[in-house]
Length: 334
Ligand SMILES: NC(=O)c1ccc[n+]([C@@H]2O[C@H](COP(=O)([O-])OP(=O)(O)OC[C@H]3O[C@@H](n4cnc5c(N)ncnc54)[C@H](OP(=O)(O)O)[C@@H]3O)[C@@H](O)[C@H]2O)c1
Image (tube, rainbow, N blue to C red; front, side, top):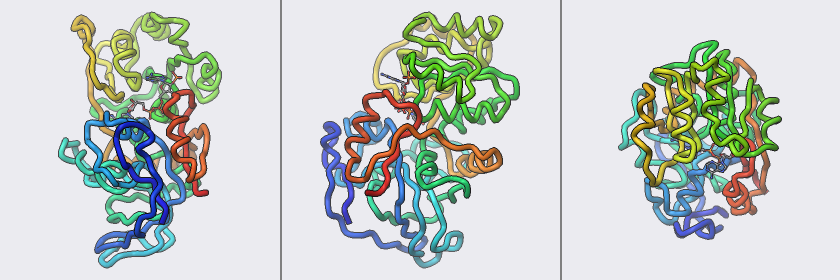
């Protein structure tokens, strides 16, 4: 089969199409015909050699994908041929609290991922696709949607009427906006792109601030909450936005630090504001299942910016790396 593997971690050129043997399902595994995948910033970081878990050279790329079961290995009890499934982000994190050791195993990093026509996966590392979603839509969920969901329902769960701040208009931010609305929260979105303001409003943001036009946006966000600050932040911007996100947060509000943080420093005075900070790592299989129930109950549909053909996978990653997109980028079959 033709698949894209990670040949080197020195840039996007390290993503190379290659003929690989078709996988076979072992005991407890099923064979999935992958029908769609989505790109995450982490896939770009892996190829750039920046991801904290180093990739095993030669693995098939990408964490996120959806497809249908075409063969069932011995001992499989929960899945059958024809089931529509998605992979989970950390194949070993089924439920409970996160532990760093669980991050050692990841699709498209330390084991073969979704940028192939076929993948063999243990049934515990798959969840069923919500019936109303297409394969394309389902392929957007495993990383970005589960991250946004797990952040909002984590140790300080979101409550109706609370104010939520989302940063940017990537996958995590838009799922966060959509989920926060399900909980009856007020969403304030910041974006660095003027042309995305109207689209964020259309998606349900009660207020949108252009951070390029208003560099001191934390005080504007505070004013929008009558001086109180927001109760939750989905901090996907990184060190460039984190201090202002903290400044925009209410006392004992939760700042979910989602963004990749590679290096840099933060002024300790930032922490005079009495907030709660949490570093998030996607979420467990149990989080994914609960999120799917909410997606089904509300007929929620992911926002897809653009779809690419399988052979154009590298273009899809380059497009994502340009950071001009709104929502998710999908890679279909040719
Ligand atoms: N910890 C975890 O579990 C976890 C899980 C998923 C993702 N992440 C991290 O969270 C971040 C967002 O992920 P994503 O998949 O939603 O990203 P994404 O789809 O690539 O979206 C990033 C968005 O951020 C804005 N942006 C533009 N330039 C930027 C820059 N130089 N730096 C930061 N943001 C910029 C853009 O929105 P505007 O044009 O509207 O400003 C862009 O659409 C990434 O750092 C990713 O690695 C972490």
